[in-house]
Amino acid sequence: MTTPLEKFNAAMRELPLVAILRGLSPAEAADVGDAIVEPGFRLLEVPLNSPQPLDSIALMRARFPEALVGAGTVLDAQQVRDVHAAGGELIVSPNFNAAVIAEAVKLGMVCLPGVVTPTEAFGALAAGATGLKLFPAELASPAVVKALLAVLPTGTPVMPVGGITPLNMAEWRTAGAAGFGIGSALYKPGKQAPAVREDAQKFVAAWTGTTHA
Image (cartoon, rainbow, N blue to C red; front, top):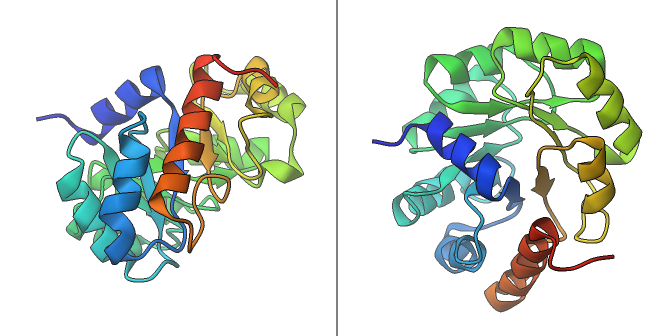
């Protein structure tokens, strides 16, 4: 049986892009999931401020066993337990909360807390975070990633989230970003699956280097 960490590590080697599906409804989960997973995405996040998020997580976990499926906007330990009970294996937060990380670690889940300063980054790693979500990336810059990586433990995954598009990924990668969270540029409520698939393919192409800004 593949563990959540093994799924995460495999995705980080192959296509380290987290699909942030804020606003996804359970009725859309299969079609939108297909549109994202078939081009190559293996990291799927349904923020908890979406309609019936636990239902969507359960549906996608069953449909995409090879993917790492979980929740975003996870703010407390009870929510971590709820996501785990729904079959989720990934916990993403907009902030650093040691209790959230501790619960995720206890349940064997991958945890990516949001940080923007060295203090938050080191605190999150000490608490057991799998990697770091640099959020909001609009508040930072590629230079911030480079500076963080100069002091963080070697190999720490830092993944900018916020305002990431196929055209600006390259400068972040050059600075050392290990991957990205992709939100409204990939999916937003009302966007149909064919359009989501088209944009998913653009992100895959941008990551693999077949397109250039």
